[in-house]
Image (cartoon, rainbow, N blue to C red; front, side):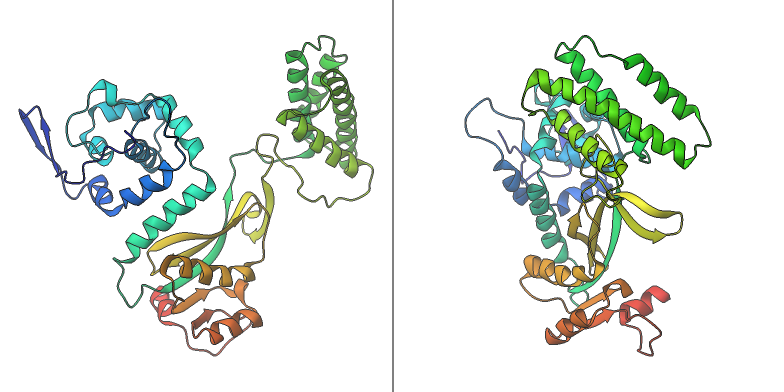
Length: 376
């Protein structure tokens, strides 16, 4: 069954009608279980399943496990082991009695389940949760929005051109071995050069440029041998490697240093540098995201992009997001001076939305109600 949650369950587990356990109603998982709109969440995910084939594990169970995993930062294997003996985990995952071993999924099932959660599905899940939680907000603050942007850093090391090209060459060598390209000339010599270059502490710009050119040359030659053997490039590894080599070769030839959609990580090719101008992190690598905080308590994603978009765009995006959730305009929008533009102020005035977008420069306007509260 895709959905085995008992809607009438109570906070008491009956183990064979022998042992009764009263659950603490103040436990965070017990509280969270009552807040989430399980029916809507299961319905959104169930559309990714087919009606034919072997019956799957309960979506309610798999979704509950995934939420617990991210809340407590538990590995998949440890999560499954704790599910066997933690009654709060079992309660949150939809069980109303002690579970048998057949009901417990394998840890690998979580990997396949995560693949079903596409950006569109995650957006539907976020909307369903936000709509239900908004009903619990005080009416005076239910349609007040605070908007800001941030960067979600990707889990990559600080990128450099030589490090990226070294990884590209390593991937091409491994791919060459996998297709039977036994003779890869100069492999040991190139690896020794990379190792010696990495050991140098104070590298000059000339040394870096020379290393980059050499790595591009050897990687391009190896890629040509692989393409001659396999023919048309259809492998993802080769596609990424070819694009990296092309971008770095363009830079080496001195045509331009500004490369559109420049790859900075082989494993995460969509990651882009996000210039922020913050202390200690002038540039971050990841996705830029705009967050709307509704009623000072519910955070929803307004916009997310691999590239660095203009903060002035998110005022309109925040209004559209609020309309999507509530089918009406917000009463107030608060944002820092990054959103200051005549177009935004005019649109807020036209829609009769209280303008809390901070203007650039010194202003004599009185602070808004939420700004007063934050200051105090």
